[in-house]
Length: 88
Image 1 (tube, rainbow, N blue to C red):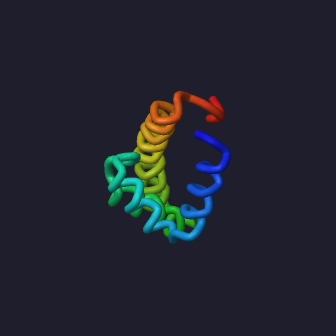
Image 2 (cartoon, rainbow, N blue to C red):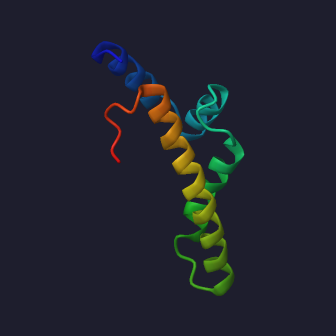
């Protein structure tokens, strides 16, 4: 990707809300489950201060799903970019 294209894409992404970014990523098949990413976003807020067992279990469940989806996202970005400039 040329620097000019990267800067244009970065500018467009910065103008989106996080939910709209997830929707766009889903439409472009960069992520497969937009609703899961919404749940991670919501869960980040609701479980950050969880101190009871149920809250801890929910945080764990979300984290496990997030790990798998984040790895799939990284793999897809590497595939689309040829692996350039993505940290291991």
